[in-house]
Image 1: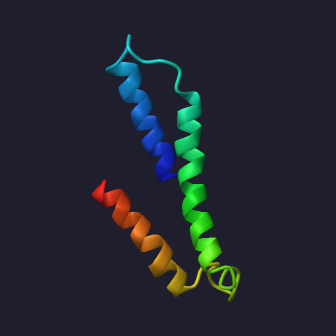
Image 2: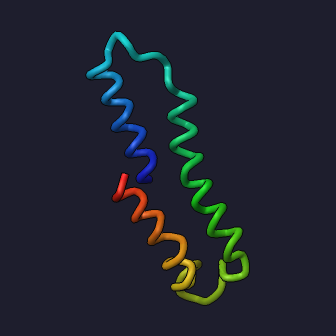
Length: 79
């Protein structure tokens, strides 16, 4: 969801500010919108494959959240 909002913001910038200099960036948008979450989920799934789907409450344990989610949010905030 966050990546698609980023893609939409970039697209609005290209459409409104760089009107005559912009090209067709559909493949780049798809790469950012689907590729970035795929990398984050792939890394957390690869590191904690035995912890997915365990328990009755959440599909991620607290350890996976702290190691996988917090660094990703920190990177987004720093960028």
